[in-house]
Image (cartoon, rainbow, N blue to C red; front, side, top):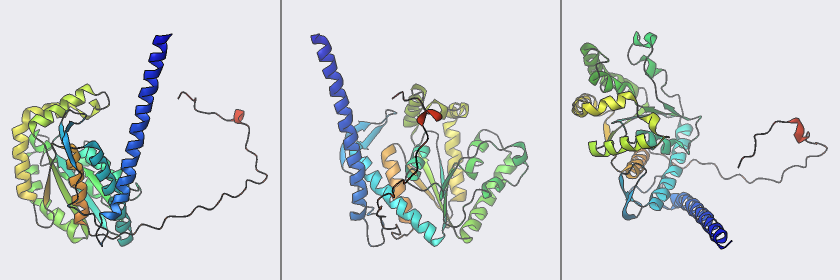
Length: 323
């Protein structure tokens, strides 16, 4: 009997700890949103010099060292995400067209950064494009053709999770394109991007850089985590043996396509949390914007239902309440 009491007490203690952690997390998010206004300048831009407090080095889920405390990271992320919402309102108001390209090593953190950028935005005005292997029909088209179909209209943001730079990277290294196709890409890509910029598109290009040691740790983490194994494709495994080849291909790609109209910005991504915050801060700094958020709506009391009567519950199907 005494043992059962002790066990129940331990369970209650664990539940209370979980509740306390959830409360702290909600407080951090609320504080981050509240701090967004306090850290903004006259144009609604975030104070880019503001940074979360440093703490003892922690380990993330993949076993990679992080210099930011979890609370500091979540608070700063929440603040920057509020600024992203303001930016989206501005882009829609001005009818801007924005394209963001995310390239880099496998497991460099591109997907996680994109997720943090988009999770607070209106999906009707922000699309993530991650194209798969081209079909037989698409292989006969002009190389850039299938990407052109996904370019933004007025007021839209398009994020390319890998892009036309596949030809300068994986296709070139793995032999999926001919030497002539690779050479033509290197020659035509800068002209293609200049055309986009001249047409009024805002083009931001980010390369996520990760060391081979950190990449290996993240690969091992994906193998151990059932929810991440899908991220480790046979192509990723094969690319582990071609680190130098990919490095040479990346150097050549940037040398040919780092043009003034659309320069490359390298993100040091060994620290995932810092990489996400740095990227979002940089995006906000590259597109001048003002706060166009509408005023909060005051909800009036609901109107009475009148004579309406809901149908009996037995006439409908419900999802079983397992939790």
